[in-house]
Length: 408
Image 1: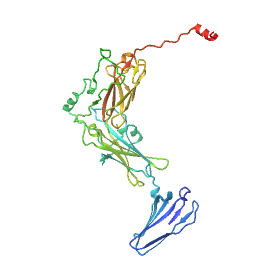
Image 2: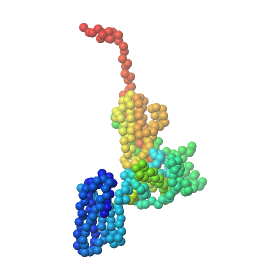
Image 3: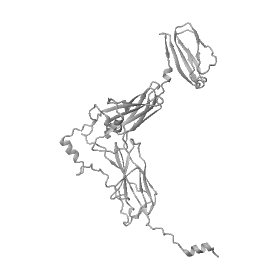
Image 4: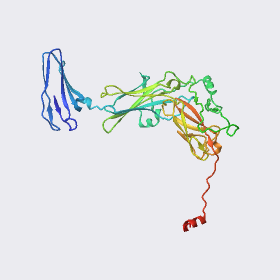
């Protein structure tokens, strides 16, 4: 075997192993020692053998890291008298990272409008470009391909799909439309189910009422995730696209997308996986996510004993389950406006600055939602004491004069 030293990084510390395979019989193998070579020189390695059987193949390995790692670099097949170099396999770096995320999130939950949902799988570091595919609950997903999206299409999300029929087809008749309208307000907005009237405690200030220093525990209210039966299909169509982005190091980054009409009744707790095949991988690279609506938000109020004039923070500390995709949060005050006069506030934390005594006993609602579902959690604010303004320091000329002159 002839070997050319290309660089000085890996050659001086590596050895070579010659493996022969033959039919039954004796076999002796020896490798001729070769003097040291310099970078760029060509070295010829010889493997001598004797056998009384039929030779099948000769395989050369490069041994590295003190013999703990070896790479197959050359095979001679004696049965067919053919040579094969494996070095090309090592010039194909495998992907080094894989991740999966939901597109266009955080996004709200919608009970009366079917939503398209897109999972995006990003794979980096492969050369050549790896093959990316999706599975649901361990089974390959039957997909429909659509045209390669352009950068302009990517900025519009799923608007880049062309040449296929729409993902959502409601096919509403007058009867179905009339049934759906019975679940709406008169102005056409969706009715809010079981979230506007949480359990009421005693009225602050009433006889026998005692404020508690801890946040009141109020049962969670889960907004129904049941869709009208006519709105969704139990056998959705999955649309797939992939784009390849060449990198400066010669590798290719692949972004694969799969889009379908989301059905929260069926898709909750569904396990989706993105798998990658590549010539340099001995087994597929896999990442997994489980679609899940938020359940049981855990609220933390600080300070736990709020006094008049304090700044109170109410924040979401987590959920009873792993939530995916990322939820969005909305804060409202039951029966009134927030302290700054607004109807609602978005974000994971609600800040109430310099709370007045009038807010004692007020209740606040945190709505956590993602496309899979929505849940409401309430907490009551207990404010202790009455507001007593701190007196402003007065300028006393006599005291200043005495301090300057010194006391006897």
